Amino acid sequence: MSNPTDLIVNVVKGSQSDRLLLLLHGYGADERDLGSLLAYLDPEGHFVTVLPRGPLAAPPGFSWFDVMTTDVTAAAEGFNDAVSAIDDLLDQACAEHGVAREQAVVGGFSQGAGVALAVGLGRSDQARPAAVLAMSPFVLLDLINVDWDAARDVPVLLQHGTDDPMVPVVASRDLARVFSEYSVPLVFREYGMGHEVSPASVHDAQEWLTAVRAGVRPSADLPEPPPEGPVKTVTTATFDSEVLTSDVPVIVDFWAPWCGPCRQVGPIVEQIATMRKGSYKVVKVNIDEEPTLAQRYDVQSIPLIGLFRNGRLERAALGAKPRPQLEAELGMLVIP
Image 1 (spheres, helix red, strand yellow):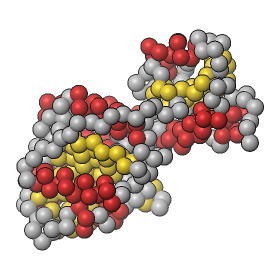
Image 2 (image 1 turned 120 degrees about the vertical axis):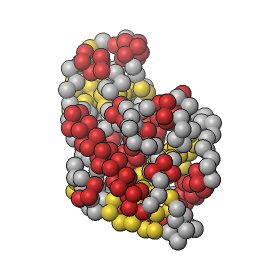
Image 3 (image 1 turned 180 degrees about the vertical axis):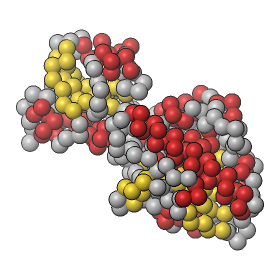
Image 4 (image 1 turned 30 degrees about the vertical axis):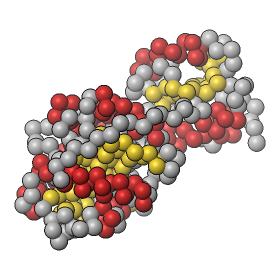
């Protein structure tokens, strides 16, 4: 990862700016992506907005770390390097523009939001920013190493689209529950959109920023969770009853939130669950949360889609593949 002085950075200084807003773009975008929202996020110009560009090429744009790798160690190192560089950039930008770090707001979209959450909530000797804006975050929660005591002083706005094909909304629902359990000041909002922002989400972000500027720590009760989708999550505690003793064959999707190919094959697995309902059961296992199951079935690379029948792993398909190829490798009669 480059040093903060090596990053390409665009700065937009509002006419009444007395605080700093650091915004980190998502995978395949650049600093102009979130810069286009400033007229709506900060219409009165209360912020010095710092818009850095990720150092890694990810055509047609850039990236903060490699989200497509299936190498856990490489993903962790890339994420930590990005957090360190942005943390240093925040210090540098606050000093350059004469604003207090503890009054700054750090935000981002997708993987940029994950880095922003780590800068705002992770363990650090630096002063905490005032708040974190997380739009459709791609989060490596274990790597953030949250300082929960300090996090109770940092309000978070968490936004996500219910139709997001890249980062499933369930990831943010789970994150919101964890934040709520640890008493982080949280506002969690869902919108009928994909992996994007919408006029409604930007409007809510602008109102939240106004409240933060006024010294408020916004928080709201979590919305009621919707019914689970066609692919049920199973754990070590429920695996035997849901999979090994099932009366019908079971498709098991071994995945992890940081795995890019897993996000590609996820919608295909959901399609199989819908089309094969009654003939097959389809479930998923997050190997980060259930390492015992990953070890039991020697899951060394993901996504791994396994077919279980009569209590044993009968077939497996590795990697993201079209539905017909996936079904063929699992020994299923392919449905056109």
